[in-house]
Length: 274
Image 1 (cartoon, rainbow, N blue to C red):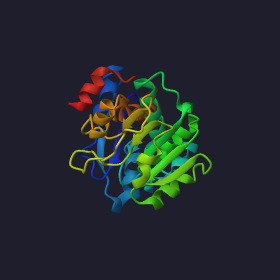
Image 2 (tube, rainbow, N blue to C red):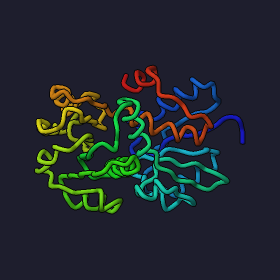
Image 3 (cartoon, rainbow, N blue to C red):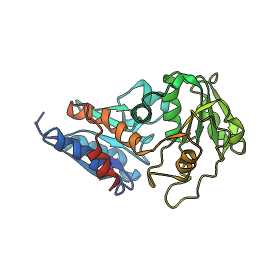
Image 4 (cartoon, one colour):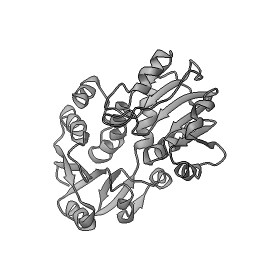
């Protein structure tokens, strides 16, 4: 293999992706020879375009919307985490074969651990708002950390029942309108919906019954301080912003391609938020 390492991110559209900022920062920081490109791949030509990446000598790539499920059919190997979550967001190319991984659960958990080091995942229930791909990865991560009960709520309840398949003993589904009624034993609230995101409706959520020792995390990072986090701070709860999940999920991918587990530093956070 040449000493110049080529990686990238595939999606459609892809112009908005912040991944090149993250990986280029690390390539420079660790003095490596390499590049990380945005690669727009429309669904129509998917298989052929992936073959082209292999031919062009890429060592791997990140996968974003709408390809996280589609790529699985092309992978020769998929790790246990990606299989359970049902999505691949990182691919390493080994001997022209695609090896698929999912680093979202890792990114979520590391963000909580770095932001609130004293937080004990086993001390109480978690309430997860939303039931999409991100929610599934987060619930998987919480199960692995030993959270005793995970309450999942979503505007369309059917999607919540899909997530129950990860562990139907520890996961409980509640109606969206009853989410405030289930806060008494909750130690962690996570918003995985687009509510509160720039250009979206705000998340209307009364936190008055949430215990004061509970932490509140919003995986939305535009804006960085959503109305949910502002309200949580006013209630006296610790909060965790969403930018850390994005940064931490990139670390294992970078390590797979470049052989170094990079660190999240203030300079990187500033670049990504600029």
